[in-house]
Amino acid sequence: MLDAVLVRRNASLKVKITVKSIVALCVIIGAVALPQLVHLALGQPGGVQWLPMYLPVLVGGCLLGPVWGLGVGILSPAVSFAITSAWGNPMPIAARLPYMMAELGVFALVTGLFSKKISENKWFAFPAVLLAQFSGRAVFLVLTAVFQSVSTLKFTAVWSQVQAGGLGLFIQALIVPFIIIGLQTLAAKDKDE
Image (cartoon, rainbow, N blue to C red; front, side):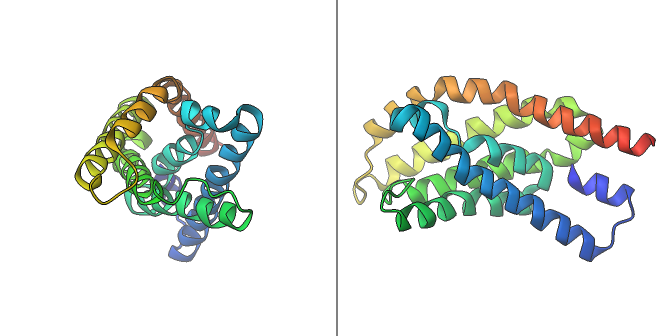
């Protein structure tokens, strides 16, 4: 979606990279900060139920496209882990980190694949988010099942977490498309002026 705006403005490659870098940085900051706020307000169960890191990553994929989105999806949990480890309370936990990097990478990659369609028709944000959520969760479950013999993260525990996060995913499936639709509307107004 962001590509369409930058092309419309005849932005140079340097400007495109700069803008995408800034947006990617903002998404990663949001993906690190939002879970901290939710954990402060609701504790660890709040994070499992509301999945706050997922929201900025889904938005980032829609805005940045598949390549930059994939990068944001992979980096968000890694940066969060690095920062929160320095405070002595790593989030996500080390055992879950590679799975979450894969899951959020898929989230952002899939929404990113819809980015061009979303710039043409903002309503594509709904199927983009739903397909991303389904794909990301499926990858997480499959990886957990495949590697459970060598990981402390067990499939039954992950399955219960997936079930606990159902409401959070449902709410994000509504909120994220409306965020994208709002941003698309703002971009369209800018085009008209």
